[in-house]
Image (tube, rainbow, N blue to C red; front, side, top):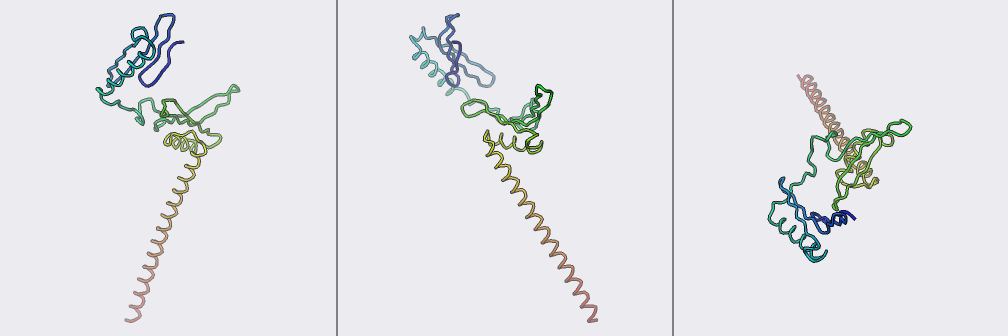
Length: 192
């Protein structure tokens, strides 16, 4: 059968050719690695070996500092500037090149999830924004990502309109002030 991940830190080994049957417990903190094997034979069966490996894992977790996460940390491998977003360029069998931005992340269960947005369908700029939103929300729901982008663009547009309205009001007030200043200076010159 081989190996199978049972849960975080515990892997099942069933390797008949080597006569290896049991659970490997692994834990790492600050570059220090601990591996311990709990064989079915030594612990009188699968259940007891699994229970012993779980107990040892819990014991070490309680003694060691919490793990450091690298989620959201940019590394030297990142080329796009946004963690979890990369440019994907594929060539078809006919020699045609397709480009897209791809967002990827790990789910709560530890599985990888991803979604791509092609330049052909969305344009390069929109594909980039959609991929960044998908990574931020960690969702492969394309409709949700598109709705979020539309909502953000509408908010941006509303802010821009509010800003231009404020500038227009300020200009109107300034013009009115200049006009009243001119009128009052005209009135003064007429009185004299």
